[in-house]
Image: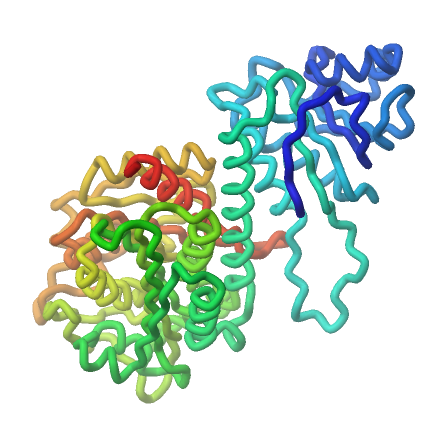
Length: 499
């Protein structure tokens, strides 16, 4: 899709469809009023007859409206003016995009940028519309024997402005939203691929491909022998039962002076998680292909910032392996030594994400980081705590937590700050090793974060538990691409602050 911004009156600009808003009170937006006047109250007459109530996220498609250059007019219900906040705007825009994609229009003109959304500006409105356009158009059918042909896809989307002229800030919003959406698509595609295709080796190939496309990215891949030399006994314990070789993938994005300390993103890349010897129940085990969505989000984010050309240094680290049961698999009760030298009693082999992350977090220190953020589908307990709305956020520094929370609010890819208190740490005490890898049922997401915190004492660090937000189940089953928007917005904010 191509996006642009154009100033002009909606009745004069030609397109396959022009979109304007209607509030629940029957009040027309400024752009809708212009159309209505030109069409001699054609739109207000329709509203008076009750065919469009203005209820939020409802649409009505009109053809051949008098004195309007566009072939179609789409009326979008916006709800009550006082209730048009970020959530309602996003719901409305998604409904509009679905309606537009159901038409044969290839080029559309949207008067969305100047809507009075509470606490949001035109740049934000445009950004969310770009993301919604890609979200509603996304399909994953590449592995079907007969993918859908001749799909109706919007080719060009223009954002119309009545009052203001296009500014550099608005054009930047478009380009950054486009890059973020492409990063989300990469993350979704990787997440939706099955475990027999998206292996650790496949993830490594994707990282190498990114480096070929972008001169600002340097990718290196370590094999199991390299990890053995580094002393990554914790990571290697997870992959012992699998025929697929583990990989430690590093992508270095150099967008600023080499002296600037990097922000390190660490993504959990378990390409299939059977639970190992602590085997998971069979129901919905197929969804454990999504246990690499943390890794996918790192790849998507690195691609996005490379497309944006952010003036920032970022390192992406992906520890990747399978967790499978076999005669060589790690057993409950086994004790391993992590790269940090700390020993771990493995009481449950299904608590494997923290075992690969802890070695990757130790490895991250070699880059002398400004900040380290790990992203992982880590605990079912986080889903119980927060459902599928917010990602769990833990940090050893409140300032960093607040920065990430703010980025989540800006991008509407929200997180919730969870406790990381010393009072939880004793749940990880072991009689036989420095720690055990589980802390019991109580506070499971917190004790998992506490485990990781033992390997991050030398730098400022945050952990995002995305077990509830990385994918959807049921009829809408599929990867969401989260938290690429949150991470990308955080990095955009950091780049802006470093100027």
